[in-house]
Image (cartoon, rainbow, N blue to C red; front, side):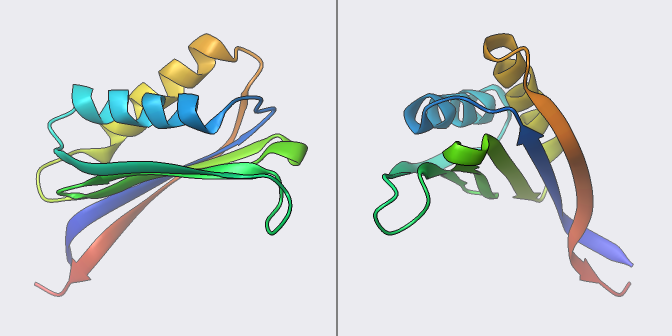
Length: 121
């Protein structure tokens, strides 16, 4: 089997932060990689239709980097999916470093890695 892409997820507890700040973290990590940002957006949720929190995404030429937060529960999920020659581990590691610099009590509960666009050789 051969894969064209790689997907890394990071699940955190103890998160206290703002969607705009997290979007900046995602964009900064993408900028430090060899990925090409094509669009970025964050939506804040006030609890009226969805639980309080946010969703943030940086679309990249190679796929996406995103974060979703349930603020009342202090949980944050980060997602780094790239194809081709861009290594999502570098982006995920940079995001993790930046998050811990600002929130030292943040706890990484789980990190998963998965091949994507798997094909038979």
